[in-house]
Image 1 (cartoon, rainbow, N blue to C red):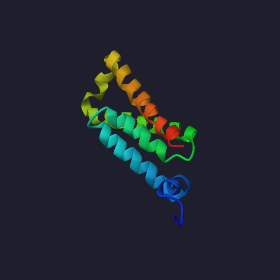
Image 2 (image 1 turned 120 degrees about the vertical axis):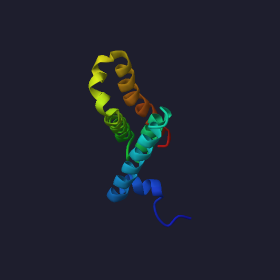
Image 3 (image 1 turned 90 degrees about the horizontal axis):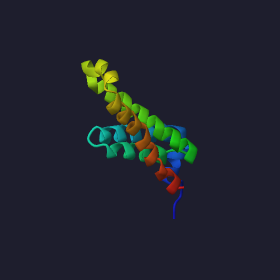
Image 4 (image 1 turned 30 degrees about the horizontal axis):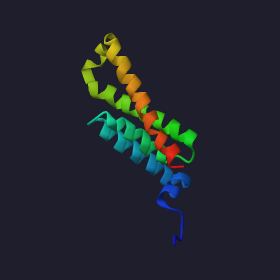
Length: 112
């Protein structure tokens, strides 16, 4: 028997626990994405699981994708100015950076 809400429920309802859960989820997801592209799906899934609603979960996953793309852009360093000239691969990188976390956000819909 449980005396209080589960940790997931606390992360979805209590403001401080929610903020910590979302930041931790995005940090872990971006760290995983720096190793393998499946980390983008994990980033979306982890970020969306902390969301109180499915709609917010989609928004959190999209935010995780934007953070991952920003981290990628920063990691390019001095090579960043050459990126606009590489159009096809840039489209793939941006598309994957946004679509894969959105795909991962389906975890929130399944876990409802």
